[in-house]
Image (cartoon, rainbow, N blue to C red; front, side, top):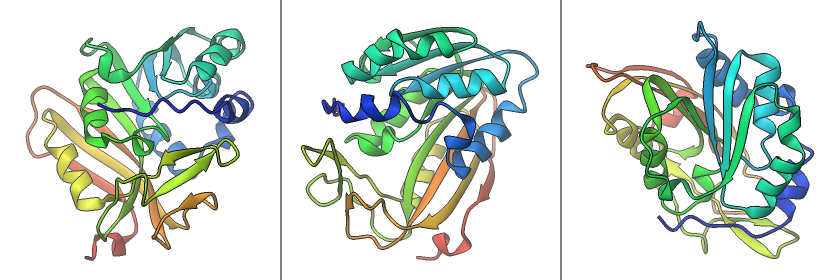
Length: 243
């Protein structure tokens, strides 16, 4: 899959402290998570892909009835902090593993698979989506963040990137055309519904990219084995859909 195992210690330094509280998450992330988790009438499980130091597990366990949380990441420093420090603050069964999701051959097993600021910082974005989708149980959800445009997208680390670790390392700053993304999602199979929330904003100050504005979006896809005509609920700027 050619995922990028970012080596910078800056990730562990930042995520070891930040994004452990609900109000530290973006409006789009909170909106979609509330929409999804409010539907569960029993304790649920979460697989966090690109978990950083596991702060999402802390935030979710304080707010919802989560029964199990697993964080996976390909940055060893992140996982060490998660195991040594964060795990004790997660108020449910939890574990962390240093692994590339493309190397995990298990199918299903999770009520919700979440990937924030991970899929859109890698190379094989669509392969990542497929791998995450395979881990979702019937009736469950895949939730992920994306940067969208109605122009041509870019997935080339030499053309669009974000500096990390005091400008010592480049992160792939992937921007997707909205039509390409939703076509891929609807082609996954077993898609019952797609909920999305997004808004226009400027690229991060540390990003080097040709875009002046992007639609920062979070998408939740529900899986059901017997389904037809997926329901779309897209709370996004209308001008995103004007080519």
